[in-house]
Image (tube, rainbow, N blue to C red; front, side, top):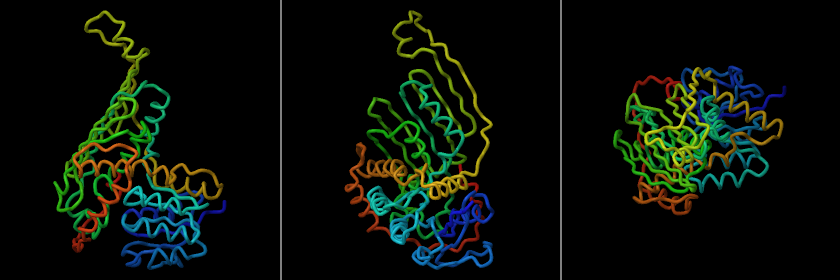
Length: 382
């Protein structure tokens, strides 16, 4: 098999994970050809002998051997570095989110031409979420009535922000909880049940941490067919909860991050309600419990999918265009919180970009503190 040559830009926490997957042979059909980081290779990172190391994304993009540029840098650099990679004729795989806002993301996608653009929204490869999507699409729950997702498992201590120049700032991150952590939940949500038609959000900005951006969000969602939803998210609660409830007119589903409980009925609840004469009656449900989902290396698997798409010239399973939904949801929730009103979808992207621009203009990257910290990137995947 001819392996696709990847170049990784950014050797921070997630960039180092991508490098390790590639170097250790965990990505079939792919190999690491080069890396780039302004500060050079971090202490403790081991790379193969003769590995080309660049000090900028532009220099790596000019490497004739590199076919795919994987960008794992702070969000505010995604647009410029992504454009440079595409202009150099490379395929592009972007760490989430694709950009600070959907308007910038569309600029990136418009520049792609015949190059492939993908985004690392790896939780679509979680076996539990894949099973939930399959059941919903197969109609096991019937018509969706209500969604509830508590997303408070994303706890982050103060040190997470204090050691970073860009995290927790509008200029560096363009948001916080929604853009960085819950972007995965938002992606799975719209992947499973579709995009809502409007959102109404309340956010706490720096409620739990000394940051500019949101670290707590509560929101109401509405879908065009009348379904409603509630989401609650936080990086300030511990140990936190990951609980997804889906309610349809033929069943309910609950996922607590470990197991799925699903109850389905042979008849619609609306039919039972109309026809029964039992004042306290209940439809008969069939209950099923699913657990024991085998964990997978989602990041390695996603890179393998991308490499196969490049080599075989087949459609991407995780295209940049598919990353627009979660980014639009995050942007809409922020705009709703800023304006204290409901926001309709599709989002008015020009209005959002104007509000974000004002936030960025008043924001500064921080001076990172030189703290002795312990980093286990595996603990961040919750």
